[in-house]
Image (cartoon, rainbow, N blue to C red; front, side, top):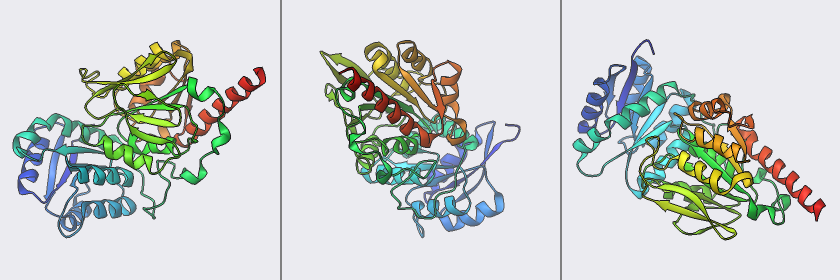
Length: 368
Protein backbone atom coordinates (compact mmCIF):
# COMPACT_ATOMS: atom_id res chain seq x y z
CA UNK A 1 0.00 0.00 0.00
CA UNK A 2 1.31 3.47 -0.86
CA UNK A 3 0.11 4.99 2.40
CA UNK A 4 0.07 3.74 5.95
CA UNK A 5 -2.80 1.65 7.31
CA UNK A 6 -4.68 3.93 9.69
CA UNK A 7 -5.89 2.14 12.84
CA UNK A 8 -8.12 3.11 15.75
CA UNK A 9 -7.77 1.08 18.96
CA UNK A 10 -10.95 0.64 21.03
CA UNK A 11 -10.40 -0.88 24.49
CA UNK A 12 -11.48 0.03 28.01
CA UNK A 13 -8.02 -0.78 29.39
CA UNK A 14 -5.56 2.11 29.27
CA UNK A 15 -2.71 -0.41 29.36
CA UNK A 16 -4.04 -2.33 26.36
CA UNK A 17 -4.63 0.89 24.42
CA UNK A 18 -1.07 1.99 25.12
CA UNK A 19 0.46 -1.39 24.23
CA UNK A 20 -1.52 -1.81 21.00
CA UNK A 21 -0.75 1.76 19.94
CA UNK A 22 2.95 1.16 20.51
CA UNK A 23 2.91 -2.14 18.60
CA UNK A 24 1.09 -0.54 15.67
CA UNK A 25 3.30 2.56 15.55
CA UNK A 26 6.46 0.42 15.44
CA UNK A 27 5.39 -0.78 11.97
CA UNK A 28 6.54 1.15 8.93
CA UNK A 29 3.28 0.51 7.09
CA UNK A 30 0.70 1.44 9.75
CA UNK A 31 -0.11 4.03 12.38
CA UNK A 32 -2.49 4.32 15.31
CA UNK A 33 -4.48 7.47 14.58
CA UNK A 34 -6.56 7.35 17.75
CA UNK A 35 -7.69 5.37 20.78
CA UNK A 36 -11.08 5.17 22.48
CA UNK A 37 -12.04 3.77 25.87
CA UNK A 38 -15.61 2.89 24.91
CA UNK A 39 -17.73 2.40 21.78
CA UNK A 40 -19.55 5.73 22.05
CA UNK A 41 -16.27 7.63 21.93
CA UNK A 42 -15.12 5.29 19.16
CA UNK A 43 -18.23 6.02 17.09
CA UNK A 44 -17.43 9.74 16.93
CA UNK A 45 -13.75 9.06 16.31
CA UNK A 46 -14.56 6.75 13.38
CA UNK A 47 -16.79 9.41 11.83
CA UNK A 48 -14.10 12.06 12.21
CA UNK A 49 -10.95 10.10 11.32
CA UNK A 50 -12.24 7.46 8.85
CA UNK A 51 -9.77 4.69 9.78
CA UNK A 52 -8.84 1.73 7.59
CA UNK A 53 -9.09 -0.80 10.46
CA UNK A 54 -10.26 -0.78 14.06
CA UNK A 55 -9.29 -3.15 16.85
CA UNK A 56 -12.21 -3.73 19.20
CA UNK A 57 -12.33 -5.17 22.70
CA UNK A 58 -15.14 -7.66 23.28
CA UNK A 59 -16.10 -6.47 26.77
CA UNK A 60 -16.64 -2.72 26.91
CA UNK A 61 -18.43 -0.19 29.18
CA UNK A 62 -21.59 1.75 28.19
CA UNK A 63 -22.11 -0.46 25.10
CA UNK A 64 -21.07 -4.09 24.70
CA UNK A 65 -18.45 -4.61 22.01
CA UNK A 66 -20.71 -7.08 20.20
CA UNK A 67 -23.64 -4.65 20.17
CA UNK A 68 -21.35 -1.95 18.81
CA UNK A 69 -19.95 -4.29 16.16
CA UNK A 70 -23.44 -5.29 15.03
CA UNK A 71 -24.47 -1.65 14.59
CA UNK A 72 -21.19 -0.74 12.91
CA UNK A 73 -21.40 -3.56 10.36
CA UNK A 74 -24.98 -2.68 9.46
CA UNK A 75 -24.48 1.07 9.17
CA UNK A 76 -20.82 1.55 8.23
CA UNK A 77 -19.12 -1.76 7.40
CA UNK A 78 -15.37 -1.65 7.91
CA UNK A 79 -12.53 -4.03 8.79
CA UNK A 80 -12.54 -4.98 12.48
CA UNK A 81 -10.06 -7.14 14.39
CA UNK A 82 -11.51 -8.29 17.71
CA UNK A 83 -9.36 -8.40 20.85
CA UNK A 84 -10.76 -11.37 22.75
CA UNK A 85 -10.16 -12.86 26.18
CA UNK A 86 -9.05 -16.48 26.25
CA UNK A 87 -12.02 -17.81 28.24
CA UNK A 88 -14.98 -20.02 27.35
CA UNK A 89 -17.30 -17.00 27.30
CA UNK A 90 -14.71 -15.02 25.36
CA UNK A 91 -14.58 -17.77 22.74
CA UNK A 92 -18.38 -17.84 22.37
CA UNK A 93 -18.54 -14.06 22.02
CA UNK A 94 -15.72 -14.12 19.48
CA UNK A 95 -17.67 -16.60 17.32
CA UNK A 96 -20.60 -14.18 17.41
CA UNK A 97 -18.28 -11.32 16.39
CA UNK A 98 -17.05 -13.27 13.37
CA UNK A 99 -20.67 -14.03 12.46
CA UNK A 100 -21.43 -10.30 12.57
CA UNK A 101 -18.59 -9.51 10.19
CA UNK A 102 -15.35 -9.06 12.16
CA UNK A 103 -12.46 -10.06 9.90
CA UNK A 104 -10.41 -11.83 12.56
CA UNK A 105 -9.49 -11.86 16.24
CA UNK A 106 -6.54 -11.93 18.59
CA UNK A 107 -6.76 -13.76 21.93
CA UNK A 108 -5.13 -11.61 24.61
CA UNK A 109 -3.63 -13.41 27.61
CA UNK A 110 -5.40 -13.36 30.96
CA UNK A 111 -2.16 -12.90 32.91
CA UNK A 112 1.08 -11.15 32.02
CA UNK A 113 -0.79 -8.76 29.72
CA UNK A 114 2.11 -6.50 28.78
CA UNK A 115 4.56 -9.29 27.95
CA UNK A 116 1.78 -11.40 26.43
CA UNK A 117 0.63 -8.73 23.99
CA UNK A 118 4.20 -7.96 22.96
CA UNK A 119 4.71 -11.68 22.30
CA UNK A 120 1.65 -11.49 20.04
CA UNK A 121 2.84 -8.35 18.24
CA UNK A 122 3.67 -10.07 14.96
CA UNK A 123 0.30 -11.84 14.92
CA UNK A 124 -1.57 -8.61 15.75
CA UNK A 125 0.00 -6.56 12.96
CA UNK A 126 -0.35 -9.43 10.47
CA UNK A 127 -4.09 -9.57 11.19
CA UNK A 128 -4.39 -5.79 10.83
CA UNK A 129 -2.67 -6.00 7.43
CA UNK A 130 -5.03 -8.75 6.30
CA UNK A 131 -8.05 -6.81 7.58
CA UNK A 132 -6.97 -3.73 5.64
CA UNK A 133 -7.33 -5.58 2.32
CA UNK A 134 -10.29 -7.81 3.26
CA UNK A 135 -13.62 -7.64 1.47
CA UNK A 136 -15.97 -6.52 4.22
CA UNK A 137 -19.70 -7.04 3.79
CA UNK A 138 -22.63 -5.27 5.37
CA UNK A 139 -24.21 -7.32 8.14
CA UNK A 140 -27.84 -8.40 7.60
CA UNK A 141 -30.51 -6.25 9.23
CA UNK A 142 -31.71 -9.21 11.28
CA UNK A 143 -28.89 -10.73 13.32
CA UNK A 144 -30.60 -13.88 14.60
CA UNK A 145 -31.63 -15.48 11.32
CA UNK A 146 -30.58 -19.13 10.91
CA UNK A 147 -28.72 -18.42 7.70
CA UNK A 148 -25.25 -16.97 7.34
CA UNK A 149 -22.07 -16.74 5.35
CA UNK A 150 -21.18 -14.32 2.60
CA UNK A 151 -24.18 -15.34 0.52
CA UNK A 152 -26.59 -14.98 3.40
CA UNK A 153 -29.02 -17.35 1.73
CA UNK A 154 -28.17 -20.78 3.01
CA UNK A 155 -29.79 -22.19 6.12
CA UNK A 156 -30.76 -25.41 7.76
CA UNK A 157 -34.21 -25.30 6.22
CA UNK A 158 -32.72 -25.09 2.74
CA UNK A 159 -30.54 -28.19 3.14
CA UNK A 160 -31.23 -31.22 0.94
CA UNK A 161 -33.25 -34.09 2.29
CA UNK A 162 -31.43 -36.91 4.02
CA UNK A 163 -32.28 -39.25 1.16
CA UNK A 164 -30.03 -37.29 -1.20
CA UNK A 165 -27.05 -39.55 -0.50
CA UNK A 166 -27.59 -43.27 -0.01
CA UNK A 167 -25.76 -46.58 0.19
CA UNK A 168 -22.11 -47.40 0.62
CA UNK A 169 -20.84 -44.23 -1.01
CA UNK A 170 -20.94 -42.07 2.13
CA UNK A 171 -18.61 -44.45 3.97
CA UNK A 172 -16.04 -44.45 1.17
CA UNK A 173 -15.84 -40.72 0.46
CA UNK A 174 -14.19 -38.04 2.59
CA UNK A 175 -14.67 -34.28 2.24
CA UNK A 176 -11.67 -32.14 3.25
CA UNK A 177 -12.06 -28.41 3.94
CA UNK A 178 -9.34 -25.81 4.53
CA UNK A 179 -9.85 -22.17 5.50
CA UNK A 180 -8.33 -19.23 7.31
CA UNK A 181 -9.42 -15.57 7.53
CA UNK A 182 -13.19 -15.38 7.02
CA UNK A 183 -13.40 -19.15 7.19
CA UNK A 184 -15.68 -19.57 10.19
CA UNK A 185 -18.67 -18.17 8.32
CA UNK A 186 -17.65 -19.78 5.01
CA UNK A 187 -17.44 -23.21 6.66
CA UNK A 188 -20.87 -22.65 8.19
CA UNK A 189 -22.26 -21.80 4.75
CA UNK A 190 -21.08 -25.17 3.42
CA UNK A 191 -21.95 -27.34 6.41
CA UNK A 192 -25.54 -26.15 6.93
CA UNK A 193 -26.36 -27.43 3.44
CA UNK A 194 -24.99 -30.93 3.98
CA UNK A 195 -27.57 -33.70 4.55
CA UNK A 196 -27.57 -35.89 7.64
CA UNK A 197 -26.04 -38.83 5.75
CA UNK A 198 -23.25 -36.81 4.18
CA UNK A 199 -19.84 -38.42 3.83
CA UNK A 200 -17.54 -37.57 6.71
CA UNK A 201 -16.02 -34.08 6.62
CA UNK A 202 -12.63 -33.12 8.05
CA UNK A 203 -11.79 -29.44 8.54
CA UNK A 204 -8.75 -27.34 9.27
CA UNK A 205 -9.55 -23.72 10.11
CA UNK A 206 -6.64 -21.60 11.31
CA UNK A 207 -7.59 -20.93 14.92
CA UNK A 208 -5.71 -20.75 18.24
CA UNK A 209 -6.29 -23.07 21.21
CA UNK A 210 -9.43 -22.45 23.22
CA UNK A 211 -11.71 -21.32 20.38
CA UNK A 212 -12.43 -24.41 18.28
CA UNK A 213 -14.62 -25.96 21.01
CA UNK A 214 -17.07 -23.04 20.79
CA UNK A 215 -16.80 -23.03 16.99
CA UNK A 216 -17.72 -26.72 16.78
CA UNK A 217 -20.57 -26.36 19.28
CA UNK A 218 -22.03 -23.42 17.39
CA UNK A 219 -21.96 -25.32 14.09
CA UNK A 220 -23.37 -28.45 15.69
CA UNK A 221 -26.45 -26.48 16.72
CA UNK A 222 -27.02 -25.27 13.15
CA UNK A 223 -26.34 -28.35 11.05
CA UNK A 224 -28.07 -31.65 10.23
CA UNK A 225 -24.71 -33.39 10.54
CA UNK A 226 -22.89 -33.76 13.87
CA UNK A 227 -20.01 -31.27 14.23
CA UNK A 228 -17.27 -31.78 16.82
CA UNK A 229 -13.61 -31.24 17.56
CA UNK A 230 -11.48 -34.09 16.31
CA UNK A 231 -10.13 -36.48 18.95
CA UNK A 232 -6.96 -38.48 18.38
CA UNK A 233 -7.67 -42.08 17.40
CA UNK A 234 -11.42 -41.77 16.84
CA UNK A 235 -13.07 -43.31 13.83
CA UNK A 236 -14.19 -40.78 11.21
CA UNK A 237 -17.87 -41.46 10.53
CA UNK A 238 -20.36 -40.42 7.83
CA UNK A 239 -22.78 -37.73 8.94
CA UNK A 240 -20.06 -36.10 11.05
CA UNK A 241 -17.70 -33.15 10.62
CA UNK A 242 -14.42 -33.05 12.55
CA UNK A 243 -12.62 -29.76 13.24
CA UNK A 244 -8.89 -29.61 13.97
CA UNK A 245 -8.45 -28.47 17.59
CA UNK A 246 -6.64 -25.13 17.80
CA UNK A 247 -2.92 -25.44 18.42
CA UNK A 248 -2.64 -29.04 17.10
CA UNK A 249 -1.96 -30.74 13.80
CA UNK A 250 -4.77 -32.87 12.36
CA UNK A 251 -4.56 -35.48 9.65
CA UNK A 252 -6.32 -38.64 8.60
CA UNK A 253 -5.05 -42.22 8.65
CA UNK A 254 -6.57 -45.56 7.71
CA UNK A 255 -7.28 -48.48 10.03
CA UNK A 256 -8.55 -51.36 7.94
CA UNK A 257 -11.59 -50.09 6.05
CA UNK A 258 -12.01 -47.06 8.33
CA UNK A 259 -10.64 -43.53 8.34
CA UNK A 260 -9.19 -42.47 11.70
CA UNK A 261 -8.41 -39.01 13.10
CA UNK A 262 -4.82 -38.27 14.12
CA UNK A 263 -4.41 -35.22 16.35
CA UNK A 264 -0.90 -34.50 17.60
CA UNK A 265 1.54 -31.83 18.71
CA UNK A 266 3.44 -31.68 15.44
CA UNK A 267 5.40 -28.53 14.53
CA UNK A 268 3.82 -25.60 12.67
CA UNK A 269 3.67 -26.00 8.89
CA UNK A 270 3.57 -22.84 6.76
CA UNK A 271 3.63 -21.10 10.18
CA UNK A 272 0.25 -22.67 11.03
CA UNK A 273 -0.87 -25.11 13.67
CA UNK A 274 -3.29 -26.51 12.62
CA UNK A 275 -2.19 -26.43 9.00
CA UNK A 276 -4.31 -27.16 5.94
CA UNK A 277 -1.20 -28.58 4.27
CA UNK A 278 -0.99 -31.34 6.89
CA UNK A 279 -4.62 -32.38 6.47
CA UNK A 280 -4.68 -32.23 2.67
CA UNK A 281 -1.37 -34.07 2.31
CA UNK A 282 -2.74 -36.93 4.39
CA UNK A 283 -5.90 -37.01 2.26
CA UNK A 284 -3.77 -37.30 -0.89
CA UNK A 285 -1.86 -40.23 0.60
CA UNK A 286 -4.67 -42.06 2.39
CA UNK A 287 -7.95 -41.20 0.64
CA UNK A 288 -6.89 -40.61 -2.97
CA UNK A 289 -9.72 -40.64 -5.51
CA UNK A 290 -12.33 -40.97 -2.76
CA UNK A 291 -11.52 -37.47 -1.48
CA UNK A 292 -13.15 -34.14 -2.22
CA UNK A 293 -11.14 -31.00 -1.46
CA UNK A 294 -12.63 -27.60 -0.65
CA UNK A 295 -10.44 -24.50 -0.28
CA UNK A 296 -12.18 -21.51 1.27
CA UNK A 297 -11.26 -17.91 2.06
CA UNK A 298 -7.94 -17.18 3.76
CA UNK A 299 -4.64 -15.32 3.57
CA UNK A 300 -1.45 -17.01 2.40
CA UNK A 301 -0.75 -20.28 0.61
CA UNK A 302 -1.30 -22.94 3.28
CA UNK A 303 -2.65 -26.12 1.68
CA UNK A 304 -2.29 -25.10 -1.96
CA UNK A 305 0.55 -27.50 -2.80
CA UNK A 306 -1.10 -30.36 -0.89
CA UNK A 307 -4.40 -29.71 -2.63
CA UNK A 308 -2.59 -30.24 -5.92
CA UNK A 309 -1.27 -33.51 -4.48
CA UNK A 310 -4.88 -34.45 -3.71
CA UNK A 311 -5.88 -33.70 -7.30
CA UNK A 312 -2.96 -35.72 -8.66
CA UNK A 313 -4.11 -38.61 -6.45
CA UNK A 314 -7.59 -38.47 -7.99
CA UNK A 315 -9.61 -36.15 -5.74
CA UNK A 316 -12.17 -33.67 -7.07
CA UNK A 317 -11.56 -30.15 -5.75
CA UNK A 318 -13.67 -27.03 -5.27
CA UNK A 319 -12.19 -23.57 -4.68
CA UNK A 320 -14.11 -20.51 -3.51
CA UNK A 321 -14.16 -17.66 -6.03
CA UNK A 322 -12.67 -14.22 -5.41
CA UNK A 323 -15.98 -12.35 -5.35
CA UNK A 324 -17.26 -14.23 -2.28
CA UNK A 325 -13.95 -14.50 -0.37
CA UNK A 326 -13.12 -12.24 2.54
CA UNK A 327 -9.48 -12.81 1.56
CA UNK A 328 -8.63 -14.56 -1.73
CA UNK A 329 -5.07 -15.64 -0.84
CA UNK A 330 -5.39 -19.38 -0.20
CA UNK A 331 -7.94 -19.96 -3.00
CA UNK A 332 -5.79 -17.94 -5.42
CA UNK A 333 -2.75 -20.06 -4.57
CA UNK A 334 -4.72 -23.29 -4.98
CA UNK A 335 -5.83 -22.17 -8.44
CA UNK A 336 -2.26 -21.14 -9.32
CA UNK A 337 -1.07 -24.63 -8.34
CA UNK A 338 -3.60 -26.19 -10.74
CA UNK A 339 -5.46 -27.77 -7.82
CA UNK A 340 -9.00 -26.61 -8.68
CA UNK A 341 -11.52 -28.64 -10.66
CA UNK A 342 -14.19 -25.98 -10.12
CA UNK A 343 -14.02 -22.38 -8.89
CA UNK A 344 -17.41 -21.43 -7.50
CA UNK A 345 -19.16 -18.78 -5.39
CA UNK A 346 -19.35 -19.85 -1.76
CA UNK A 347 -23.11 -20.40 -1.86
CA UNK A 348 -22.81 -22.90 -4.75
CA UNK A 349 -20.04 -25.17 -3.43
CA UNK A 350 -22.19 -27.45 -1.25
CA UNK A 351 -24.92 -27.89 -3.87
CA UNK A 352 -22.33 -28.70 -6.57
CA UNK A 353 -20.70 -31.26 -4.28
CA UNK A 354 -24.03 -32.85 -3.35
CA UNK A 355 -25.06 -33.06 -7.00
CA UNK A 356 -21.77 -34.80 -7.82
CA UNK A 357 -22.21 -37.22 -4.92
CA UNK A 358 -25.79 -37.92 -5.93
CA UNK A 359 -24.65 -38.66 -9.49
CA UNK A 360 -22.01 -41.07 -8.17
CA UNK A 361 -24.64 -42.74 -5.99
CA UNK A 362 -26.96 -43.17 -8.97
CA UNK A 363 -24.16 -44.73 -11.01
CA UNK A 364 -23.35 -47.09 -8.12
CA UNK A 365 -26.99 -48.19 -7.88
CA UNK A 366 -27.18 -48.79 -11.65
CA UNK A 367 -24.13 -51.06 -11.46
CA UNK A 368 -25.78 -52.97 -8.63
